[in-house]
Image (tube, rainbow, N blue to C red):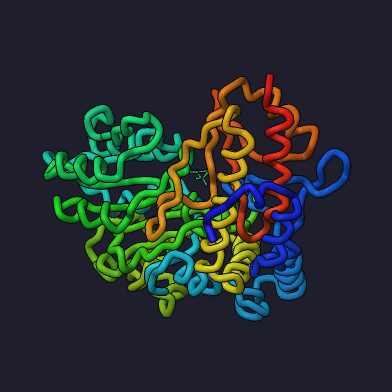
Length: 429
Ligand SMILES: Cc1ncc(COP(=O)(O)O)c(C=O)c1O
C-alpha cells in the first residue's frame, strides 16, 4: 500500500506499520549510536555510513583468533581459509547486483576500482574520446574522469560532458539523457553515471542508457555507491559493461569497507584487454610458482591486484549475510513503502519548511531508492543544531540540502514519524 491518508499521520499508525513489517526483526541486528541523553539515536545516514551489524564483532574476532593460533598457516587452516577468502562474498554480490558469479568481485576501494575499470573501458581514439557524466557528480568521480582524460592526452574541458539538468533545475529529464547520448554519437567513448545520484537521489534507467550508449558505439559504466544494497539491479541482463560500488553505505561493512566491481561476461577472458595487473589476478593454480608472466583468471578476478585485507572482507561477509537473509526484493519493497511514508509525512507536516527534490515514486519504474533530499526553505543551521542535541543523525550539504535515508534493514516507521515531528517543531525561524 503506497497511498497514505490523515489516519497515518500519528505515532500509533507508524507503530502499526512496524508490527506488520516483515523486515522489522533485522533492526535488532544492528548497534545504534547513542543520542546525548543515552537513548538510541534516530539514525538516517545509511547513505553515508551504514550501522554496525552486531554479528560483525564475532566475524572479526574469528579472524583474529585464526591469526593468533595459525599465523601464516591461516591462509589454509583458518576456519575460512584466507587464500580464497574473497570468494566468500561472490554469491552474495552476484545476487545483490544481478550478475553471474564470474562477473563480480570484492576488492580495493571505490575510486581505485573506478580507475581500474576506466583503464580497461575508457579507450579513447582521436575522434571518440568523450565521457558523459552527471551534472552534479561526486567530486571523486569527477577527479577520476578528468584525470583519465588527461592521462590519455585530452583536455577534460573538451572530453568530459555533463548531463544537462531538466527545466526544474534539480533532476535530469530521463529522455534527455538518451537524447544527449544520441547527440554525442560517435564522439562518445563512455557513459559514466552514478546511480542513484548522490545529491538528488535521482535514479537512472540503466538498461535504457546502456542500450543507447551501445547503439552509438560507446560503453556504459555505473558507480553504484548509492545503488548497491539500495536498488534492484540486473547488471548482467541490462548488458552494463562495468560497475563499481562501495560497501560502507547501504551495505554496512564499516568505515573504508571494501568495494565491489562488476565486469560483464562479454569482456571476460580477453587476453588483449588493457588492464593494470597484479599477482592476485593471475591463474590461481600457478600463482605460487611465482612465474614472470601474467595468466589472467577468466573471471573479473583478473582485475584483482593484491592479496586482500581479510578483516575488511570478514566485516563485509558479516554484513552480506544479512542481505542474503533479508533479500533485495524484500529490502526494496519495504524501502519504497518507508520512503513513501517519510515523503507523505513531510508533505503533510512540513511543506512550508522544505521541498523534496528527489523524484516521486513511479510504479514499475525505479525513479529513486531510499534516500530523500530536502531543499530547506529557511536557514537549516538551527535545525542541524537541534538534530545534534536530540541525537538525529542525517547529513547536511551546503548550502541548503538535507539528505535523509530511512534504511529498510534497520529503520522503523516510528523513527520516520519521530524525525518528521522534530523537523516540524524546530524548523521555523
Ligand atoms: C558517488 C560516490 N563516488 C565516489 C565516492 C568515494 O568513495 P571512496 O572514498 O570509497 O573511493 C563516494 C563516497 O561517498 C560516492 O558517494
